[in-house]
Length: 238
Image (cartoon, rainbow, N blue to C red; front, side, top):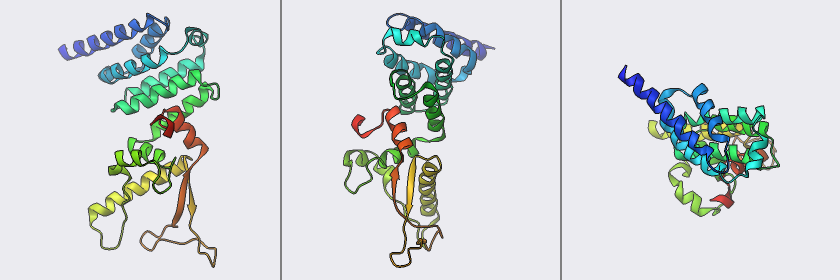
């Protein structure tokens, strides 16, 4: 019983904290977010939401009051906010929380994107793990020697892992995972792979080890660029 009471107290503390955001430039946001939290978020995830709220409040406080007031009864906006909180309750890193908050804030302020589109981008973000997001960002500047600062920062993720005959089990597993990350990005339409072809026959070349077509190069799609921009992870924002 004590544990249950503690969880409920944590929830009430969180709702009270969110309610404080009603002071300032976004007077309606606190009560709105409080209601959403009370309705859709499990108790045990309040700690994650506390961190998310701080990030979200910082971004929303920079949005003019009249813009937010215009959205007060917009069902698409409410739906977007709810989706953001659900995903934030599962987010285990501050980076992920920043991505979610950025999509929400940009959905409000960016005239080039509709609220429904922002929710679609949130759904795509939900499909990606943090490693895959780093790989997507890599494909924004895939040239040799490009964006060295970012590559050095994430060298543990971006170092190529090649499967070869005679490689040990650990190496094969790591190579398989890295390959799967890239394939997942392609399946989601975020990057496009270009198959290497024989210069004489014009037929696809195949890898002897995997039996899969060889990739000549990969580049980011417009959807991939849009996602990076909306989560604030473009080359300009590094």
